[in-house]
Length: 333
Image 1: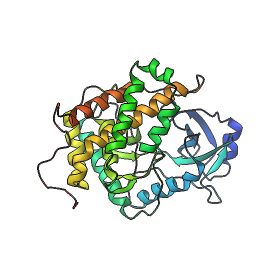
Image 2: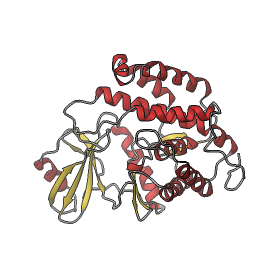
Image 3: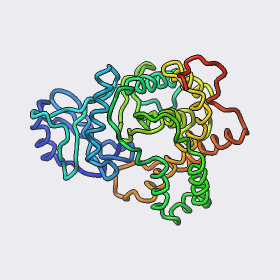
């Protein structure tokens, strides 16, 4: 989350007048994240999140996200409801941007996840994948391998060099590997694609909210687990791989949904691709974020360090954290 577009008190009052949610009492910008403009809105009846969709979110994709989250909510998963106004409209326009008012969920995102928390999110990810088994919506992954190539081309080479002297050549080598080895034959399904700790809310170790579905898409299902593994199993700077957290996450997911042998074998490559994806988006944002934006930029090199870990796994320099020696929980290939 972040704030790029300012919402005036008058604009907020006009928006809330369309809803049956009470009068505005407070509105505070949320600086975390980098994609959309977000505000915590308090009214006389409740708290809400107001999201204004910026350039990376296409307004035409909003019905997909709304339906995807609604599908999970109907099956009892802890996801934030999109609020319709008194005429049933969900997507509004605020300050020249498409916008949605979204229910506020209680909980705290773990800063440094432990094994119990990782097990809870592994179970939640398995439950999401199971719930989406009969979801018919489709959305291509704009930040899949083809998107990585395009994003790399948009990154200023001097800007990449300023982040790290060899970053440009490293990215080119990874893009070549992905082009040659990406396992496009694996089963595709709806995925969250961004299940970082800051997109999970918890209380007493239990998941109370899964949020921020704006990268959700149809792609390799196991890639979703790879993204989550890369996001949860390291220190924020990309060092300090935590084997206990890794095992808790993988075992909980395997028990809740299962992994085929083909998925297990390709997870190190999928995780390496996940690291490349976040390395690229962070590098681009690092270079392109306006200096006056209320946003916390994130270190791209934290994902280069993670990428190096998975590269070492593929090169046999240390053990495969995804390896499993039993068929327990495995789905048929």
